Image 1 (cartoon, one colour):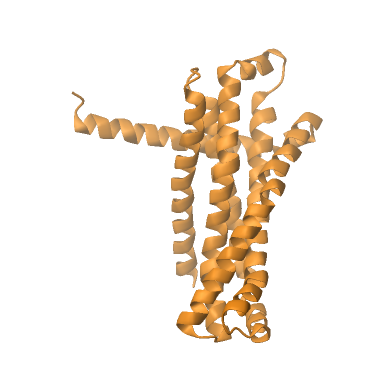
Image 2 (image 1 turned 60 degrees about the horizontal axis):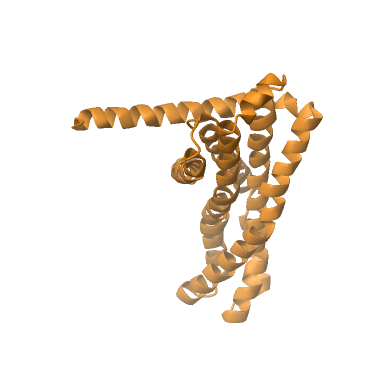
Length: 259
């Protein structure tokens, strides 16, 4: 029977090993970003932007509309139709929290799991080794475009979520509750600051980096067994979910300290 302390030590070692492998993959991608000048790498980057960003526009926009209209309707019923208070709540809850988090969950469920499964399948079937034999750098061809594409796609999708939530959401909410739109949009224009935009971009860039790095590190470091291909997707979603929440908590603490 394994001693409890030995089990804890093994779990801690596994966690730090996973963290270091993800960080290593992320550092590799940015130190080899010039590989995008290669046509094959650039095409992979464009394909990943298409899958991660453009093809996810509809679910992200729908989520933004539902969250923006639903939350604003509830706030109006509970707090009244005061524009300043409702805009402040939209800024804190939707713009800063819900938009980055829900967008990241959509991306890690779609792209994170797909990347991990794809890379795990390539490793198990020997395709990564074949790239070495053909003189192609697998890191530049497989890791760089996927990680950089996610770092671009997640902020872009979050912006779409925020735009739909704060612009179209109030229109739908006004059909449900008494919400004067002109005072709301005037207060919204005064409330959203450059600092909010910079914080949102930094946060979503980080979340995109986490999702892609976790997926890539799991995909390329799985054991050479076919049973690990579906497990790679599960591990990618679970670990990305935990790290995204921790990163969100860290940004929330930084925001509170800075205010």
